Length: 497
Ligand code: NAD
Image (cartoon, rainbow, N blue to C red; front, top):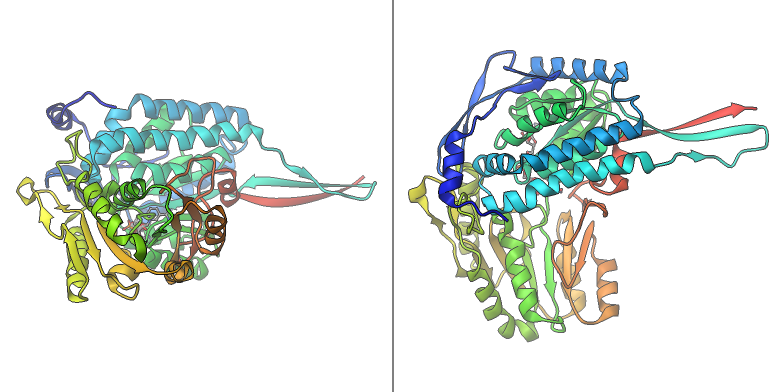
């Protein structure tokens, strides 16, 4: 926890030297075209300065550099224990610079400074440290061969990895990719979101300072349709890892098919169901978790519990508890350490969220709280935490990912109906169930088509468990040793003895 006040953070923000250039072969550099875009803070509309707007020329440079660095073996053939040591130094440097990273993250994308400091920076450094620590403890395999042959099954780094990441958890999403990609010896090019490029740009320098050689980590800020597309279509990128929307995820699969069939691993959208059964062990705890599940990070969470399914027989008891819990989540200035709901990432996204609230009204859902823009006088993009009741699963606010603090409440009568509604989604990222019945918990968990399943809690998880989606929420997994599969090729070597 921080003892700094809003005035302290404001002062630090004024003094902050913000780097907006790309990072190629260990040096900050302008885009080849010299083009920049203005980085605007959603906290209060202030300009954070120019950011390099990279495009195809920069992608070509960075990929060539990443390839040459990979081939040189300076990192790819370094012993695992040495890679581990460098990654632990990198994680330690992130922690040592936590306040600066947290401030950059908040100014850039609007999340509350308290969360940036207590969740985002430690979550990101843990991802780097965990992957680094793991890499000298992994063994390859020997096949069950005839007596006069030896069969080795080994994992090799894949080569050049492009990581295209979103704006909602810029540091954490970047480090979920960087951890296993670097640990396994690859060279990586990160394309941060144009809405939140600053922490990735800063990370590159910390990686270099930690002893990760120049060229192993390059950062290309810029737009998706320019530099993102250039990386996705590049003939010398071996693997493309992505977190972002399902729409762009599908496009990336096409780009891979149109180019070199690079491996494509996608963490995409969600519309997760949070199912509260009448036999929940504690309705108050379920209500508090339901409020947090839609309000944390302004609802800009792939795993947001955006569909609350409540069993009819306890609904009258539950709804006052939910409304009370929502009172604890209020939009406030993102640099105020007391704030729990910060600013939405930009004006365009604020308008998207407000349009979904309009759609809720138009489809005759019942507004229970919120529903409006707030704190407009700050110049920032804030919206009130919002609940709609009487929602049907076919309404747009139940079917589509809003990515804001807007909760849809759907009522059900039976377990079968709850599971049918929960699974009636193009997405399959996560779900939660609240019940005291062990068999019901297990049966429901098996029946729900999601990558992460929570029982009597919402949003549990850690580096030790894989994270990713079923259906159109994506493929492959971030976190845990399973993530290493994405960054390595499996080789079988047969030796005649
Ligand atoms: P987005 O898909 O709009 O953008 C993601 C990234 O893709 C950005 O860096 C963007 O510049 C880039 N991009 C856009 N068009 C591109 C193109 N044609 N070629 C290459 N790159 C392109 O997503 P967003 O708005 O930044 O993030 C929100 C989305 O991310 C939500 O759908 C959310 O659910 C999802 N998300 C998923 C997870 C997960 O782990 N499953 C985690 C966080 C966020």
